Amino acid sequence: MRQVVICGHLFDVREKAFRAGANVYIDGNQIEKVEYGKEPEEGVERVDLSGKYVMPGWIDCHVHLSMNGEPDGVTPMAYATDGALAIKAYVYAMRDLMAGFTGIRDEGSAGFVDIALRDMIESGVVKGPRIFCSGMPLGTTGGHADSHFNPYIEGRSSMGIIVDGPDAGRAAARENFKRGADQIKLMATGGVMSMGDDPGAPEFTLEEMREICKEAKRKGKITSAHTHGTLGIKWAVEAGVDTIEHGTMLDEEGVQMMLERGTWLVPTLSAPYNIMKHGVEAGIPKENVDKCAMVAERHRKSTKMAYEAGVKIAFGTDTATPFSTHGSQALEFELLVEDGFTPEDAILSATKNAAEMLGWSHKVGAVEAGKLADLVAVDEDPIADIRALQRVSFVMKDGEIFKQ
Image 1 (cartoon, one colour):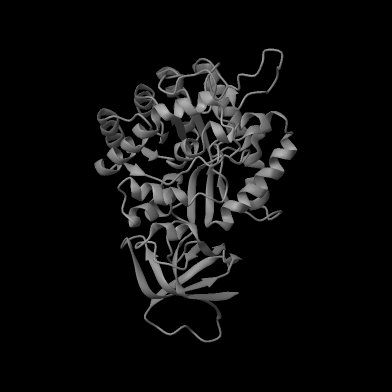
Image 2 (cartoon, rainbow, N blue to C red):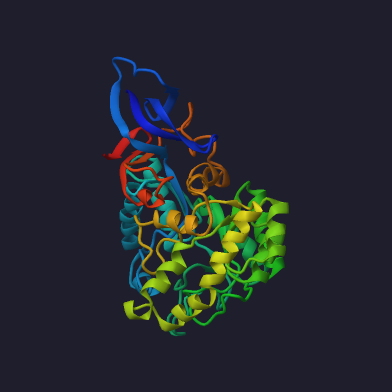
């Protein structure tokens, strides 16, 4: 079936601007052509978005599909079966899609539910966004991926695969790839929402991370690293990690290392924003709120410094951390602009940049001939008010309309 989407204004990722009077022709799930200043062809099904601002479908490069913003995310997972988590993951992924995120990268979910859901979507069993999968994240004993349950709870009770030493790291990476992971996620430093560790402290050694990155590169895959502390960021970059998540205590030397190696940053400003906004009164454990208070302001400054220096930045939210719920990710656009991003660059981070980082540029990230027909639209000009992106009125994925 051929369709023509009549756009009031269409965001051109190459021009970094909205252009008026575009007609986007779609054949099946693929964009056939884009024309400007012409009358739509006769005999083609019309989708009238003439009063809207249309963009490529957005990509959130940091979500967790097995959680949804609970004040204490570990407890719901501890009492859930893999089957229950998979059903929840489907519900959460659909919320992301309906909010305009036609693509997401899962940065680690329990029980490989991200891979299961991706495969069911790709095989047509269920609907949902495109998913780039990490499988189970890799972490060290007592680190950010370790659950800190009581000693009498044994078995697979952690938030990830716990590895100590280069050989164990290599084996865990291979296990994830065997399960179908698109990348490997490493917990390079302590975290905010984990108990008993220090966000600023490295957890993996440089040698351990280097071996895991080498294994990923042998498979033609990428790696991402959860990082807060300055030294852990630098070790991750030096080890060959492709994408730095959070980058909270990034310094000038770390920025220079990232520029030299072409390393990406995924800031996730929403996570600390929501933790500090809701706090202990909303049920977030005091230890976690206290740790967040230590790093939140530094996080904003580090992101601004990286952006101004020209570090490659892709959109990500850490959705599923406390009160960062699936479907609410567009808040991140507002926070990026508050941090100094132009509205155009904020939109680019979730479209062209995100697609490039994930190796998806051949199929999404722009509204161009040959790309898949993923579109999102809002009623107001987001360049004038970036908060307009929090009010999505139209979503199309693969030429199928999900919201109108």
